[in-house]
Image 1 (cartoon, rainbow, N blue to C red):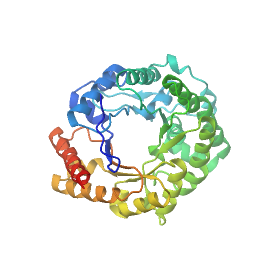
Image 2: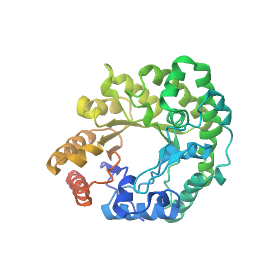
Image 3: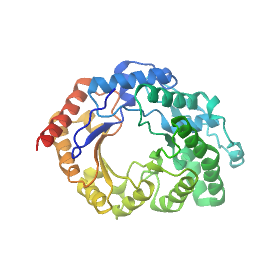
Length: 347
C-alpha cells in the first residue's frame, strides 16, 4: 500500500483517527484492540476511505504496560478502554514492590502490539513507530493522579523509586522488545504523555520530576521522545513550556489547539525556526465537530499558511478525530486540506 505524499516543499496531514475508526466501521473495540489483524485491516480501510497521508497505527498506548503489570481496566464496545481509577495497582506505597520484570511476550495486550509490528512489516513495510506510555502518565495510571501529586510534595524518595522502577522494569525493556521485533535497536520510540499537560502539572513538576525521569529513560534506551499535549497558554512565559518541550522532543515543535487559539501559531513557528526543528500544528477535535465547514476552512488555511513558512518539515495534525463526527463532514475537511495543498504545489 502506498502512502500519499506531496513534493519536498509540501507538507503532510496526519490524524489520530482510531476512535473514529471504531465508530465508522462498527467494529467491536474489545476485539479491535486485541486482534492485530483486525486492527490493521480496519486502519487500512479507514486510510483508503478518507485518502489519508498516513496509516494510523495508534492503539490505546497508555494502557499496555499498566495492564501488563496488573492494573485493572474498563473496556467498552464502542470506545477506547480506560484505567479503573478506583483500583490503582499501587494503592499503598508498599505495593511498589509489585513492579517487577514482566514477560511481555506472554501478556495478551503486549502480544497484540508485537503481532501488529509483524503484520505491519509484512503488509506495509518499513516505518512502524514503537510506542510506550511515558513515565509520568504510567505512574498516574498505576498510582492514581491525586495520590501521585501528594507523593511528589510529601515523599520525593518514594517518587524517585517509583519512577526508577517504572523506567527499569517496565518501559525500557518494553521499548527494547519492540525494537527487537522491528530488528532495529536504533528505531526512535514515541512516548505518550497526556498527563503532563498544564494545568495537570506545573513547571516545578515538569522541571524537577518529568525531565529528570525522561533523561534517565533516555539514558537506558536512547532515541526516544515524549508527545506532550500542551498548556502553554496557562503560563506567563509560554516560551519556557516550549523550551521544556524541546528537551522532551528535540525533533518537533507541537502547537495544538486551544494553545494556538490564544497564543497564535506564529509563536510556535518562530520557536521551530529559531531552533531548527520541525513544526506540527494541531486542530482541536471539538472544533471540527462543532464548527461549520466555512469556519474549519478558515482555520486550516491559516495554519497551513503559517506552517509553510517553517524551515523544516511541517505537519498539519487533527487531534483525536471524534468518533461521532459525520464521515461526509470529515471527508469534506480532508478535501479542504488536499485542495489547499494542491494549490501550493502548483506554485
